[in-house]
Length: 100
View 1 (cartoon, helix red, strand yellow):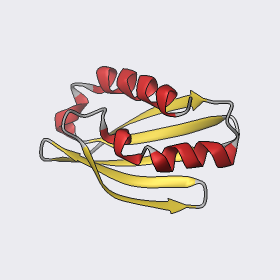
View 2 (spheres, one colour):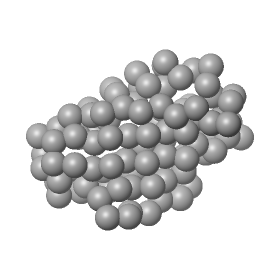
View 3 (cartoon, rainbow, N blue to C red):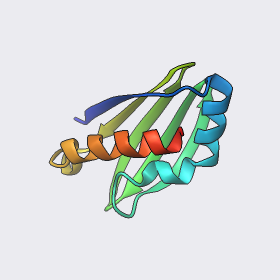
């Protein structure tokens, strides 16, 4: 069973601008895992559903974009659970940079 990490990232961009920044920076979303790559992605309304693959692992991921924040959810496979704290920190840091 996977272990989800959730992070809320505040922003002041508004919904449309936040979506645009995320779409433009989609490749950067995989940086929380060394060697990570976004292999699939699709928008479902204002939610981006994507998969990150790295180190033989698949991470099902979702970003729910809202007017003043982005709610991120990443389902970590067992091998990556050991790094949950570091991954959460990296996601928070990278998310804030992406939404500047």
